[in-house]
Image 1 (cartoon, helix red, strand yellow):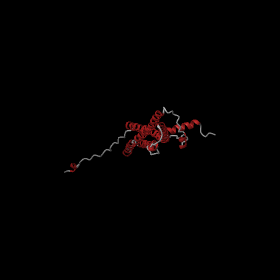
Image 2 (cartoon, one colour; image 1 turned 180 degrees about the vertical axis):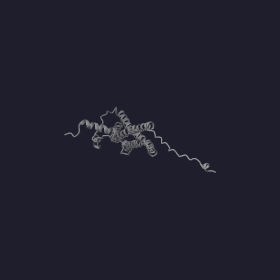
Image 3 (cartoon, helix red, strand yellow; image 1 turned 30 degrees about the vertical axis):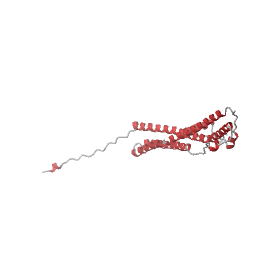
Image 4 (cartoon, one colour; image 1 turned 60 degrees about the vertical axis):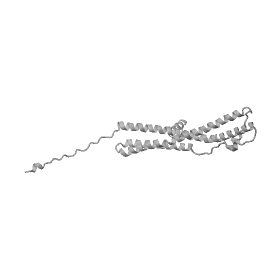
Length: 228
Protein backbone atom coordinates (compact mmCIF):
# COMPACT_ATOMS: atom_id res chain seq x y z
CA UNK A 1 0.00 0.00 0.00
CA UNK A 2 1.43 3.35 -1.04
CA UNK A 3 1.53 5.98 1.67
CA UNK A 4 1.78 8.93 -0.71
CA UNK A 5 0.63 9.27 -4.33
CA UNK A 6 3.26 9.47 -7.02
CA UNK A 7 2.43 13.05 -8.01
CA UNK A 8 2.90 14.20 -4.42
CA UNK A 9 6.33 12.60 -4.21
CA UNK A 10 7.34 14.22 -7.48
CA UNK A 11 6.04 17.61 -6.33
CA UNK A 12 7.87 17.39 -3.02
CA UNK A 13 11.02 16.34 -4.84
CA UNK A 14 10.91 19.34 -7.16
CA UNK A 15 10.15 21.71 -4.27
CA UNK A 16 13.10 20.37 -2.33
CA UNK A 17 15.35 20.62 -5.38
CA UNK A 18 14.26 24.23 -5.90
CA UNK A 19 15.26 25.35 -2.41
CA UNK A 20 17.87 22.73 -1.47
CA UNK A 21 19.40 20.96 -4.51
CA UNK A 22 21.20 17.69 -3.98
CA UNK A 23 23.13 15.48 -6.34
CA UNK A 24 22.35 11.77 -6.46
CA UNK A 25 25.64 9.93 -6.73
CA UNK A 26 25.75 6.37 -7.93
CA UNK A 27 28.46 4.09 -6.65
CA UNK A 28 27.64 1.17 -8.97
CA UNK A 29 29.18 2.72 -12.08
CA UNK A 30 32.62 3.23 -10.55
CA UNK A 31 35.12 0.73 -11.96
CA UNK A 32 37.31 -1.28 -9.63
CA UNK A 33 41.04 -1.85 -10.05
CA UNK A 34 40.39 -5.40 -11.29
CA UNK A 35 37.96 -4.15 -13.94
CA UNK A 36 40.49 -1.58 -15.09
CA UNK A 37 43.16 -4.23 -15.44
CA UNK A 38 40.86 -6.57 -17.37
CA UNK A 39 39.80 -3.87 -19.82
CA UNK A 40 43.34 -3.22 -21.00
CA UNK A 41 43.42 -4.95 -24.38
CA UNK A 42 44.71 -3.38 -27.57
CA UNK A 43 43.55 -4.48 -31.01
CA UNK A 44 45.25 -1.67 -32.92
CA UNK A 45 47.36 -2.59 -35.92
CA UNK A 46 51.03 -1.72 -36.13
CA UNK A 47 50.45 0.98 -38.75
CA UNK A 48 48.01 2.88 -36.53
CA UNK A 49 49.92 2.54 -33.28
CA UNK A 50 51.51 6.00 -33.35
CA UNK A 51 48.25 7.66 -34.32
CA UNK A 52 46.43 5.83 -31.53
CA UNK A 53 49.01 6.99 -29.01
CA UNK A 54 48.61 10.61 -30.13
CA UNK A 55 44.83 10.38 -29.80
CA UNK A 56 45.09 8.82 -26.35
CA UNK A 57 47.51 11.52 -25.27
CA UNK A 58 45.02 14.19 -26.39
CA UNK A 59 42.23 12.48 -24.43
CA UNK A 60 44.39 12.40 -21.32
CA UNK A 61 45.29 16.08 -21.79
CA UNK A 62 41.62 17.04 -22.19
CA UNK A 63 40.79 15.32 -18.89
CA UNK A 64 43.59 17.27 -17.22
CA UNK A 65 42.22 20.51 -18.70
CA UNK A 66 38.78 19.63 -17.39
CA UNK A 67 40.16 19.17 -13.89
CA UNK A 68 42.05 22.47 -14.06
CA UNK A 69 38.92 24.27 -15.32
CA UNK A 70 36.82 22.90 -12.46
CA UNK A 71 39.34 24.01 -9.85
CA UNK A 72 39.60 27.47 -11.43
CA UNK A 73 35.82 27.98 -11.32
CA UNK A 74 35.67 26.68 -7.76
CA UNK A 75 38.25 29.28 -6.70
CA UNK A 76 36.06 32.03 -8.17
CA UNK A 77 33.02 30.83 -6.22
CA UNK A 78 34.93 31.03 -2.95
CA UNK A 79 35.33 34.78 -3.45
CA UNK A 80 31.52 35.21 -3.34
CA UNK A 81 31.63 35.18 0.45
CA UNK A 82 32.65 38.87 0.32
CA UNK A 83 29.35 39.75 -1.38
CA UNK A 84 27.37 38.02 1.35
CA UNK A 85 29.39 39.79 4.01
CA UNK A 86 28.51 43.18 2.50
CA UNK A 87 24.79 42.36 2.39
CA UNK A 88 24.77 41.04 5.97
CA UNK A 89 26.58 44.16 7.19
CA UNK A 90 23.97 46.31 5.43
CA UNK A 91 21.19 44.29 7.04
CA UNK A 92 22.78 44.71 10.47
CA UNK A 93 23.03 48.46 9.91
CA UNK A 94 19.33 48.53 9.00
CA UNK A 95 18.49 46.57 12.12
CA UNK A 96 20.44 48.83 14.44
CA UNK A 97 19.39 52.19 12.96
CA UNK A 98 15.70 51.43 12.34
CA UNK A 99 13.47 50.89 15.34
CA UNK A 100 10.24 52.16 13.81
CA UNK A 101 9.62 49.76 10.89
CA UNK A 102 9.98 46.36 12.55
CA UNK A 103 8.50 44.53 9.55
CA UNK A 104 11.28 45.79 7.27
CA UNK A 105 13.87 44.80 9.84
CA UNK A 106 12.48 41.25 10.11
CA UNK A 107 12.38 40.81 6.33
CA UNK A 108 15.95 42.05 6.04
CA UNK A 109 17.17 39.65 8.71
CA UNK A 110 15.38 36.66 7.12
CA UNK A 111 16.74 37.42 3.65
CA UNK A 112 20.28 37.93 4.94
CA UNK A 113 20.09 34.60 6.80
CA UNK A 114 18.93 32.72 3.67
CA UNK A 115 21.68 34.41 1.65
CA UNK A 116 24.26 33.37 4.22
CA UNK A 117 23.11 29.73 4.06
CA UNK A 118 23.28 29.63 0.25
CA UNK A 119 26.69 31.29 0.22
CA UNK A 120 28.07 28.90 2.81
CA UNK A 121 26.83 25.96 0.72
CA UNK A 122 28.45 27.48 -2.38
CA UNK A 123 31.78 27.88 -0.62
CA UNK A 124 31.49 24.42 0.96
CA UNK A 125 31.12 22.58 -2.34
CA UNK A 126 33.76 24.79 -3.95
CA UNK A 127 36.21 23.80 -1.22
CA UNK A 128 35.30 20.15 -1.76
CA UNK A 129 36.00 20.58 -5.47
CA UNK A 130 39.44 21.93 -4.60
CA UNK A 131 40.13 19.16 -2.10
CA UNK A 132 43.19 16.96 -2.52
CA UNK A 133 42.51 13.43 -3.69
CA UNK A 134 44.46 10.54 -5.14
CA UNK A 135 45.44 11.51 -8.68
CA UNK A 136 47.43 9.22 -10.97
CA UNK A 137 50.07 10.55 -13.37
CA UNK A 138 52.72 8.91 -15.50
CA UNK A 139 56.20 8.70 -14.04
CA UNK A 140 59.57 7.46 -15.21
CA UNK A 141 58.70 3.80 -14.63
CA UNK A 142 55.82 4.08 -17.12
CA UNK A 143 58.12 5.23 -19.93
CA UNK A 144 61.18 3.17 -19.05
CA UNK A 145 60.08 0.14 -21.08
CA UNK A 146 62.02 -2.34 -23.17
CA UNK A 147 60.96 -3.37 -26.66
CA UNK A 148 60.75 -2.11 -30.21
CA UNK A 149 58.72 0.89 -31.35
CA UNK A 150 55.45 -1.02 -31.61
CA UNK A 151 55.79 -2.57 -28.17
CA UNK A 152 56.84 0.75 -26.68
CA UNK A 153 53.80 2.61 -28.04
CA UNK A 154 51.55 -0.24 -27.00
CA UNK A 155 52.84 -0.03 -23.42
CA UNK A 156 52.43 3.76 -23.39
CA UNK A 157 48.85 3.50 -24.62
CA UNK A 158 48.05 0.96 -21.91
CA UNK A 159 49.63 3.13 -19.24
CA UNK A 160 47.83 6.29 -20.37
CA UNK A 161 44.53 4.46 -20.57
CA UNK A 162 44.94 3.06 -17.08
CA UNK A 163 45.85 6.44 -15.56
CA UNK A 164 42.94 8.17 -17.29
CA UNK A 165 40.51 5.50 -16.13
CA UNK A 166 41.76 5.75 -12.55
CA UNK A 167 41.35 9.54 -12.56
CA UNK A 168 37.78 9.52 -13.88
CA UNK A 169 36.21 9.15 -10.43
CA UNK A 170 38.29 11.99 -8.99
CA UNK A 171 37.48 14.37 -11.85
CA UNK A 172 33.79 13.44 -11.91
CA UNK A 173 33.56 14.02 -8.17
CA UNK A 174 35.09 17.47 -8.61
CA UNK A 175 32.61 18.21 -11.40
CA UNK A 176 29.69 17.09 -9.20
CA UNK A 177 30.78 19.40 -6.40
CA UNK A 178 31.18 22.27 -8.85
CA UNK A 179 27.65 21.65 -10.20
CA UNK A 180 26.21 21.91 -6.69
CA UNK A 181 28.27 25.05 -6.03
CA UNK A 182 26.81 26.59 -9.20
CA UNK A 183 23.25 25.69 -8.16
CA UNK A 184 23.60 27.35 -4.76
CA UNK A 185 25.41 30.29 -6.34
CA UNK A 186 22.43 30.89 -8.66
CA UNK A 187 20.06 30.82 -5.68
CA UNK A 188 22.28 33.26 -3.81
CA UNK A 189 22.08 35.66 -6.76
CA UNK A 190 18.27 35.41 -6.73
CA UNK A 191 18.22 36.16 -2.99
CA UNK A 192 20.43 39.22 -3.54
CA UNK A 193 17.98 40.48 -6.19
CA UNK A 194 15.07 39.93 -3.79
CA UNK A 195 16.94 41.81 -1.08
CA UNK A 196 17.64 44.77 -3.37
CA UNK A 197 14.00 44.84 -4.52
CA UNK A 198 12.72 44.72 -0.94
CA UNK A 199 14.99 47.63 0.05
CA UNK A 200 13.62 49.62 -2.89
CA UNK A 201 10.01 48.87 -1.87
CA UNK A 202 10.60 49.84 1.75
CA UNK A 203 12.33 53.07 0.77
CA UNK A 204 9.51 54.10 -1.59
CA UNK A 205 6.40 53.04 0.32
CA UNK A 206 7.41 52.60 3.95
CA UNK A 207 8.90 55.92 4.82
CA UNK A 208 9.82 56.84 8.34
CA UNK A 209 6.92 58.73 9.95
CA UNK A 210 7.50 62.34 10.84
CA UNK A 211 7.37 63.05 14.56
CA UNK A 212 6.25 66.55 15.44
CA UNK A 213 8.11 68.23 18.23
CA UNK A 214 5.98 69.28 21.17
CA UNK A 215 5.26 72.97 21.53
CA UNK A 216 7.49 74.65 24.04
CA UNK A 217 5.92 77.17 26.41
CA UNK A 218 6.85 80.77 25.87
CA UNK A 219 8.00 82.93 28.76
CA UNK A 220 7.63 86.72 28.79
CA UNK A 221 9.56 89.14 30.90
CA UNK A 222 7.11 90.98 33.16
CA UNK A 223 9.56 92.71 35.48
CA UNK A 224 8.46 96.07 34.15
CA UNK A 225 4.93 95.58 35.48
CA UNK A 226 6.13 95.62 39.07
CA UNK A 227 8.31 98.71 38.82
CA UNK A 228 7.24 101.77 40.73
